[in-house]
Length: 288
Image (tube, rainbow, N blue to C red):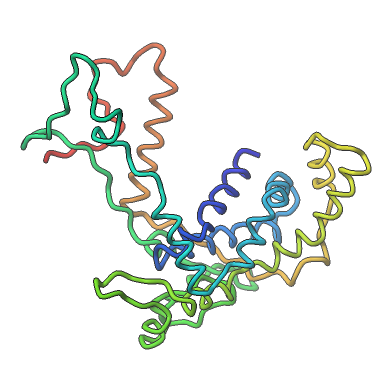
């Protein structure tokens, strides 16, 4: 259940309008998550009642995606939400600059001192490669997106679009900054693979609501039992071809895995304090 809720929280964060409209590649993350949900619903429905329950609870996220606004006014309104994010607290606007007695303001770093930094994360297209399972059960790698037609429901690639279309779908301001346009939003919104999930919600939401009302259920365990014994055979759209994304080694995810594993090792071995007086670091240090 924890993993299911985390996946839905990711989708909720990635599908906010300000995030979708703030960078040309951000919508690909929504496609990838929807791809995961569709694979599980179509091919692994049994045994994933927790995820199905989480999808039902967060059904408004999918309805909002299906009704994503595409007009210029809505796009600008979505981007304004990002600009209204709270500014970081600074010394000048905190208690009128009054500091605690005996404290001294932080001095800027001098040359030669240590500075922490994060490795730049590679582009989304560098993290995975596509493979498709053929009818005889063998797996074959798909050609680069720029050389093949896009399968229905897959994230549109900038490289796969003619140059003049890309100019039409997104515009650039005088400063060279990319700007989203209604045509650009429509170009990928129409390809969102929502059919399977919306059909699941259409079938299961009324059933779950009826059970809750008839039996007065307030415990999710009873709903999970109902979902475990349920089936969507014959009710979902025709299953899509299995699409597998194989992990490709890269510096960004290697740094994440390494930091995560060391964090787990560190936190589970603090008693006894075996890390004291060692050179073990949980982040990378570079010289200025």
